Image (tube, rainbow, N blue to C red; front, side, top):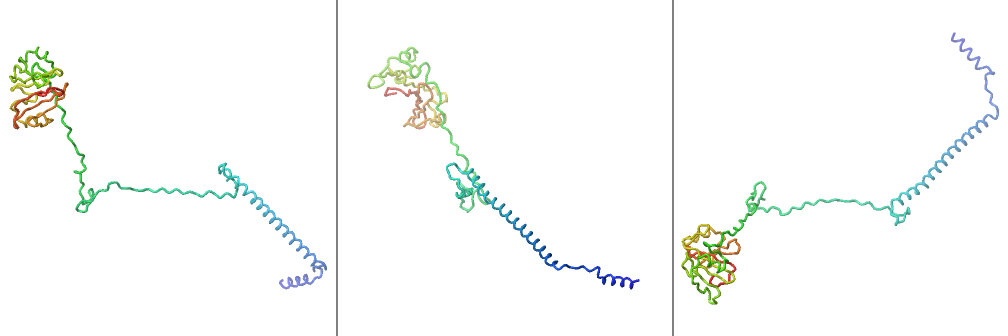
Length: 271
């Protein structure tokens, strides 16, 4: 069976009718066809390159125009919008924080800073200083019995508290002095023709509203009247009243001997 197949194949291959006969110009035709195909590929490649270059050229010619228009819109109208204008330099802002220490704590003698471990807090030195305001002037009426500072001589005589006759209270004879029914001293009350009574003397048994009188200690006066001021052998205490007047405590240096009321605005030398 295999030998028959081989014989049949040999017969067929040796048959001249199955040979392909090539014409004499077949080689030239094949070469011409190949040349045409190369020219077509070259033409297509060239056309594609030209189209690419034209497209790129169009893009390049349009790009500067678009850039110039955008820059011109952003620039102020007073500046040229030419594409040759250099771009504005970028500005960077740097914020710097500085920490300043005001009045830093001073190290103590041990080298430690107050308020830190090993140091003292110094709380006693930071306490606000308190000051005691001055005591306000005391307020008491400037009167003894029916007589009052500033009262005119006529009104004083009507009270029946003055002992007549009067005596001159100064060398000029302007002011007059009277004893009173409670104080036998002839200068117990002094009266100015312009100011009225400018001095009243308290009886020896009388006390001020704060319990000071003849026989009181100087220390008692200063305790009862913290605003008292020393003037020679006298202690003076200005009172808050109208008209303004002052207590005059005559002393012997230890105790009070006489208490008088004196009008601040007086024109009698002996008052």
